[in-house]
Length: 137
Image (tube, rainbow, N blue to C red; front, side):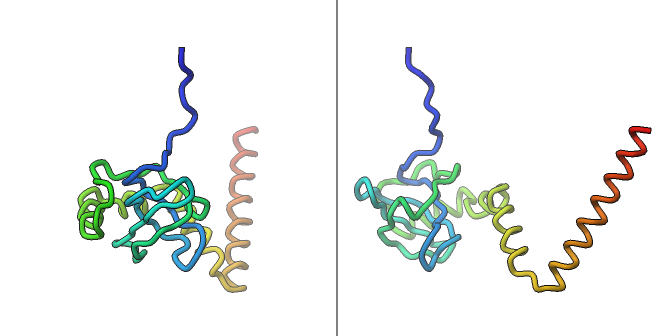
């Protein structure tokens, strides 16, 4: 009897990846062709990532994958497939992308913005504490 696999995301043609380093860090691309055990050809026509060889250790696999992308598909084919399957919209609506956007927004705050966030957190914490006290009483 075989055991179920723990892995859900595989390196495959059509898999959408998040780039973690380099000038395109934080952008998504699609694996267009697998070169070897260390690198793949990626292409991100809708996110501004040019077609290039990219090492696996500098990308993270996402849950999103293009269903019928042929091997070594050209940039035009990748673009059509990404538009047809609304990959960018799926990515932007994912909780992962939303968390990344929230972290970036938080990092870009100035001193007054951080101060305002602190006051809002205090206000929320106080409201929660008061409502819990009412429920317990």
